[in-house]
Image (cartoon, rainbow, N blue to C red; front, side, top):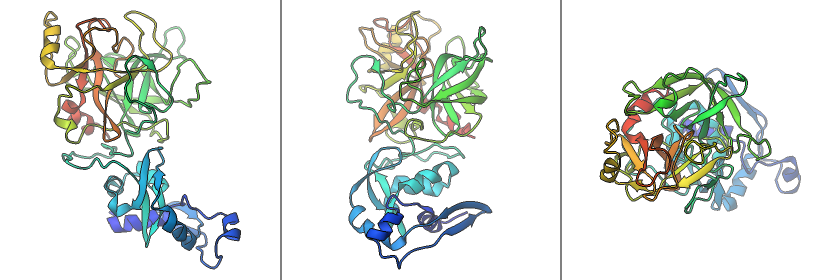
Length: 400
């Protein structure tokens, strides 16, 4: 087990700096007398990298550049500071997860003595965190998760999403009886680690034809939308053990992908609501977001283009009253109700399993999973979402 100090030193040595000194820089700007030659490191028996850089030149550049704002590898704004002062990245470093080392190395923006400086996010989400058990895959913390590249000041109607707006959104593919090679995308999901997707229980229940997941997509029918999606086979589907197909209670499942997913600008996970105040709130009087490729109206055609919408969370007593004539509906602290009283805008068929997303300190958190409703966008009937914070133990236990 590495100490934090040795990890920081290792991170600094391995980093190919954003201020890397090229041959041209060396000829015009840098004194050639101070340089490291090629170095080979072997850590725990595994060859890591062969790196050549100008140490003193990088440090000199850092004097003027490291106080400037920066942009991290996911495109989020930050400031270049000593990693020991950046709690979010320090927590990631201490976790020693292999999927985050590339992100950490790419976040280095200079040096302060022997310590690397990193592009630290402007927001610090570590305050008031409730202690949550970690597994080999998570839960992840900002800035590794929750970074959106869209403008979401206020979406008052369903509109087409832009590329990178929801980089965790996942389309779940089911085998097509007519053509086994062309999947039918019938449910959504949300990437929460390099290997796992959260979806609705009814999307996997007795659905042996669910076989793949598509990530990084924008328009399902277009190859010229700027997206570069990847299709990943599904290794395992983990349905909540108390899922009830009649009442849709405990309507949540975890999908384990067949291989780890490399994070990029347009493919990376959302954060789980493992922090206060998100872990113990009902989200009333908030306006979270939904997104998906579902039907544009009840029993209507699905949308090939990813659509997004902002909707209000409905008080639970109002929601209970809305569904009182439905004897199977269970409205309790395991769900969130959201939607407009006048109807017209809602999740619909094909959106099941997709995310209900709430921004907090400039990062997005998965607070709900699309579960069910009465038809789609019917006046007086909000949509019902599985409340993610009520199922954190189930989710985290299965991040393996």
